[in-house]
Length: 406
Ligand SMILES: Nc1nc2c(c(=O)[nH]1)N[C@H]1C(S)=C(S)[C@@H](COP(=O)(O)O)O[C@H]1N2
Ligand SMILES: [Mo]
View 1 (cartoon, rainbow, N blue to C red):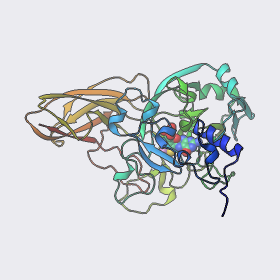
View 2: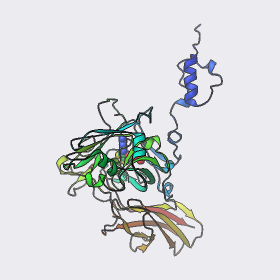
View 3: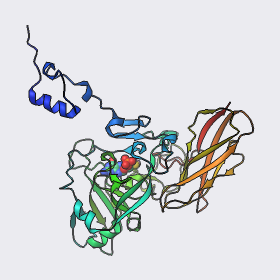
View 4: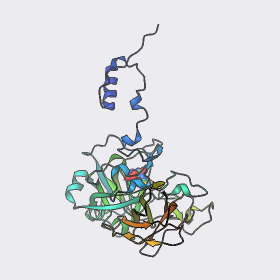
């Protein structure tokens, strides 16, 4: 008879610490047994997310919200979407974390500790809209590869940090600077330490805006690990891929940054419109900058049945990249006529704006409520899918919800 082999004391201790409590009959635990609690960690608990969030991928982690979850004026962590291109860094030591400035266009390379960054520069807080360039991708036809985001890869939290422009002034930048590119501590899916999962950036004009932050807090607390702890670049209103998480380096470049996912077709759209399915050459693809005008109805939830209501208050948010939203409308007759919503000013530039409207329904039955935002340059959201593009970016079609009045 074979003797059962039990787990060693040290293994047991490390399992117990991973689980967070004693394993009561641990001395009976067979060696090599995969403890259930440590298999398939609950991704929502793991990242402190609401369990109504939708998991799109677990390697790398990608998770989106649903429209009704985004009802808060300031998005709490539990409803913030997660978009990762690589593996989240482990064992982060904030005491040894540094941010290095290099590149052709710095006068001299310079490295700051986290403590220096926090003490040396004035701190600012802004509410900033971050939307993945691929939000809405799932609707494109022919389909585009990549995470099939529906409408929930957007959020608007409050970010606290220091202005990138203040640090750049301290570093000293040459006149020929064109772009900044970020570097980060996450690792490539292949495990190859020489490869960066993503290294994007923004032109100097965006880097020098007041609202472009090197942030260390989200909603008044340390940035959650999944969102870039302990340091992240925030460039609100641009595709969120420009907002590098786990930031440990900034290169000041004398040309457009050519890091991973800056070149080729990544985060680019055809410079001129193309027919659905058409092949586009790399050199005919242009970098996405400011995001297009868009809105979401966050209350009520699509599919709701309302008992004998004559009128209903709807609400939501609208945003327009670098621009302000100047008009918000809704329709209950499939876009034949549009009525004005009341629209608030943003709390600061690059924050989403809240709208609401009281809708009167003529009688019982099924309705769709459509919402349409228009930006300060008079560009309105398209009712149906906008220009097809090979990677499925920038779908800013009107959001629609279904309602039954019984
Ligand atoms: N270091 C690093 N930064 C990153 C990414 C990443 O994979 N690694 N993903 C980018 C993309 S594509 C998006 S949409 C946003 C998502 O930010 P969030 O996960 O905090 O919502 O982070 C951006 N910054
Ligand atoms: Mo993204």
